[in-house]
View 1 (cartoon, helix red, strand yellow):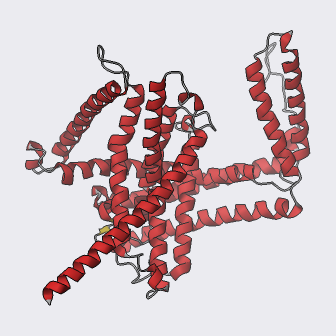
View 2 (spheres, rainbow, N blue to C red):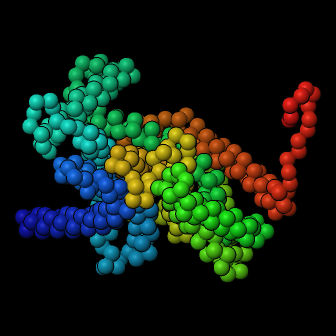
Amino acid sequence: MEAVTDVSVREQLFHQRVRETIICSLLFGILYILSYVVITRFKKHGDFTTVDDEDAAVNRIALWMCTFTLAVSAGAVLLLPFSIISNEVLLSFPQNYYIQWLNGSLIHGLWNLIFLFSNLSLVFLMPFAYLFTEAEGFAGSKKGIMARVYETSVVLLLLTLLVLGIVWVALAIVDEDAASRESLYDFWEYYLPYLYSCISLFGVLLLLLCTPFGLSRMFSVTGKLLVKPRLLEDLDEQLSCTGFEEDAISRKISASCWLNFNVELLKKKYLIIKTRRLALEMRRRASPWQRNLGYPLVMLLLLGLTGISVLIVCFHVLELLIDEAAMPKGIQDAHLGKVSFSMFGSLGAAVQVVLIFYLMVSSFVGFYSSPFFSRLLPQWQDTTMTKIIGNCVSLLVLSSALPVFSRTLGITRFDLLGDFGRFNWLGNFYLVFLYNMAFAGLTTLCLVKKFTWAVQAELIRALGLHKLPLPVSQTSGPGKIS
């Protein structure tokens, strides 16, 4: 009887593993297809249609690796919201037959897969893709794809040994255990998690710098996409100026056969100005409801989301001082469907999901708006393979740090699952406390500065003071003005 019971339990476990594998494969397949569609919209067609078939094949292989990395980044972004929504669904429909596949084992497996694929992409795929596109084969070897593969493998192996040596030296200095200074005995369980912990810490610090700046930039970016009220924007004046510029460039193109003009540059400027003119005409044709109601509502929504984020972080700072359970930590078992992770129930969970997506979008906006990373901004159908690799690495670092970032700030109470909770610095109270204080301070400072300058600029534009000539006064001495 016990043997029959054991067989039935093993069969149930086997069917559960098969079902979870099919679901994970289906979800990742959807993300991979969407990532491939996005990358093909930005790639430079000249890199894949070159006369040299070998270079085109190398770029295609690198593109597949970048697509895989981008799919992993999308999975890391959706990981925490999907877990929160799954918990609320199980709470609302505990006995529903059609959602029995949604359980803690599946969620835990997704967290482990994202962690594994993130390590694989950061440590192997992206360095291999970059070195593969730059490789030409060893001197004296026969040219071809395999020659590039050999050179890339050797260089990647040497780079891996160098990085592991640096990690070993760092651990020997920091760790007081003498055994860690003598051997690399626990490579998989100790050194690789420590390396990824450092990468995750770098990603979380990068989010700390980019997100507050992105939260303030969101108002400007959204304002460019929406139609402002007539008080804040003079579309007729902008249309007339754009029309004059378009006519002037059109005349220069027509006279290029007699005058020495760069025709290609003029054509690019003409297309840009024409696109701007068409966009302004569409905005002028917008309905009064869209013009006078849409813009204020969206601005209020952005301000509300930003204010809620800052308030949650401030409340989490107080929790850190009172309760040790507020520290970000990892758990081994995902007890889904037992209790809501928000004190406001499903509504609070929905707000958490919206805030997580909002912070992620803001971090992307801040990242690409910063002067250090603005050059990485991809261009439509004109992005080189090297820039695509750089974008994929940056997005992976930011997105894989999102669950840790959200839990560290107290945006959600959903504890980190799998290896995400094993990072060494998560247990450091002073680091977590200072991180929360820095985020609240930087976000408040950026918003105050943004709204101060924005209100001043809009008032000047609304009152027409920007059209007044600047005062010019003659100073002492001939030819000097101030």
